[in-house]
Length: 431
Image 1: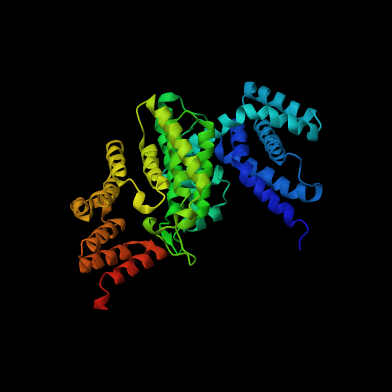
Image 2: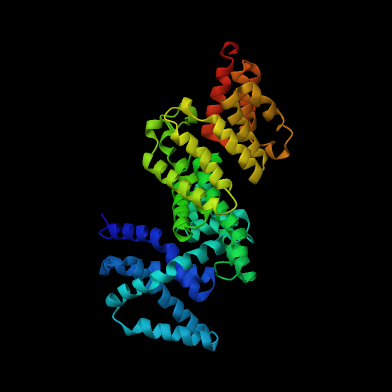
């Protein structure tokens, strides 16, 4: 066995935790995300070269930060930046070079704590800039804040590694060409930009929770990354109601992950899940975050879309058995959600809740009214929901046809298998 294998594994673990902080800290100096990532990677290479021989430092994160800042300051000095900025950085460089590294590392680590929160916020708001495409924001965020390699992101989203690499490069070039400042935007702009930040985290989690395509029903690693980002945001922005609303939603949704598949990896629907397998700690964390979000919302403009969705998830979390679910309250929450975030998908989800609260006959006309929605023409959940309602109404042949249509639309193999099984169960006498 390679004697240095354990050290390399430790470096990988440290890097996953520290990468965002290091990139953010360096970006504050160089004001260029591409260059900041390159210099942070230089520090990682240095660790791979030195730690197997010298041992892991007492404070590995600070060692990486110090090394990356050394590289940044050297680069800036070589480029001969404007005299005022150069003088500030030169003084910083003299301070870095003056001390003995082991003693200085702890001092630097203590000094940087005042800035690291702001640095991470700058990095998040820059990586999720609305100027970028949604795909670009997701790829860049997972790269810079999740510490994921291009190959890991490509595997997670089932696209080629060159495609992900191009998205990341294009995103960096777009930010550089537009001279997007590395900063936390001011209040008015922050509200608009925060929507983009939260959307990225939400999209990453959703792709992990219900994979769009491929052989697996879920991709838990993506859920973990999104949850980590949401917790980071909540720690950095504890007074933002929708940040806490999103955190509550993801904690509550993540609590079900262990019960959403059976031993063979096949999907288990919400009403059939073994609720004793739901993670009670995550539920507690989610309900706590939702309570804080509600308290903050009372001082502002009311609950936002993420907090309302978290409220719906909380109704499920509080129900010991599926039959205990307060579907009437869920319908009212969907009514509120439709006011702040009207969309055909929200209308479809509301129809499902109406079916559970008032019966399938009340829900079917709502679903049929959505059949003409262009946005839902290729959305497999529309025929799937309609099929479920038809089956409950004793119209199995029609239900079978819709289940088969839903199966033809989905690109997820596990989901297709489930839908075809439901189609086959609709009219077994016809087999």
